[in-house]
Length: 142
Image 1 (spheres, rainbow, N blue to C red):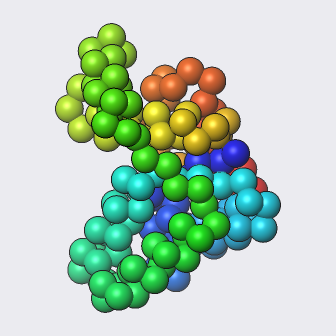
Image 2 (cartoon, rainbow, N blue to C red):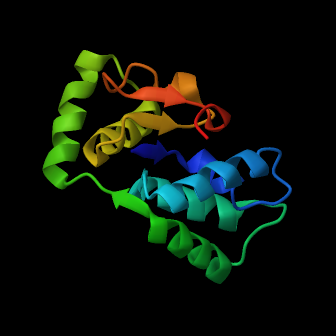
């Protein structure tokens, strides 16, 4: 199972994004193989970026359709309240502070999904957050 970060989902939406082709290729691979997952939080981030970008901004209904499409072939995972509290309780031991908490939420959702690979262009942001979870750039995972 491959878990997709929101930056891959966003790149796959904008045809003029410099990583559009790589994102489209890896997402199409996940569609065909049925081996992809993402988090509910990543879908919300994707929607926010698509509707909030100043250039090539998506209308809200188009962003909703894109999120619907992606969620039709990616397993969408969310942490329960108890899982979130447990994660927050452990962040001190992990040395996670500030905005990195959001990376930790994504990484924990990836682990919950059963993914062995976390696909993102921000590899260093996720390193060490979940033991056994390989962090890979999209072009390395086609």
